[in-house]
Length: 316
Image (cartoon, rainbow, N blue to C red):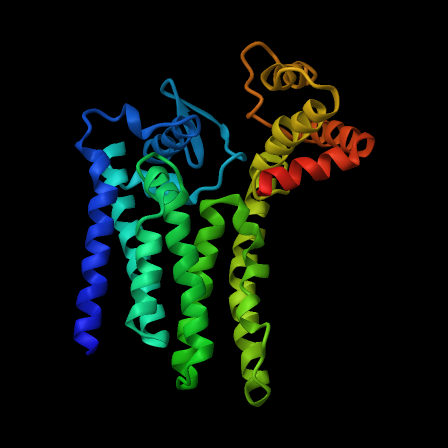
């Protein structure tokens, strides 16, 4: 029965892999890129060229990067071209489908495992994002692996040492996810969810496990924020939060409040920063970060309900 279950789940994962590899039938590599892809590729080139974590732009090393985190550029630096990276992301996507299906099947039966794996295998957004130079597939794999390892450590009776090894691996996976996408800063909180309903007989042991799985990703985030402070004078995991707040959330508030063209509002916000002609609004230094936050808080305090509306619409 066990071998049959594994064969069925592997067959579904293979189908998921073929779906994710299908975009490679297209010629060239232009289809692998969106607005964020060039910066990731420049960071990967910078790592390969010895710039450290900085973009290689026109053969010149740019200033230290604070907009992006290093996990995905390191992943890209392993591969020779974007097509190879997309193929690797297809494998990660299929692996994610398999581990979700296997975890569900071993606990709630083959039907539950198949259903979970098929839903993920046919997830259009995962397939589309995995076919581009974007961090989604890597982040999804690390997040899924970390949470499922954490659940494995606490929902099955293991010898103490093995349990500690599993939960440490979960913490390391979540820590790696923090470095792939800045939204991973929330993972230490998310990692608490499996411990919401503690077992009274194992409360002390579960507290120890929870501490491990929370501290590892938290330490990774704090460590990278300290790196950014040392290199760029900014105590932050990433400035992408400030950028998105200013150019999307605040722009949305102004759009809902005053109307007008959204792109034009963004351009006006950019002009308010008094950037040099050659300066990109994504090249955020400490002074610009302060100005963007101050302007954002000013607009939000003047239109708090519109800000809530923007957040709810974005979430939906």
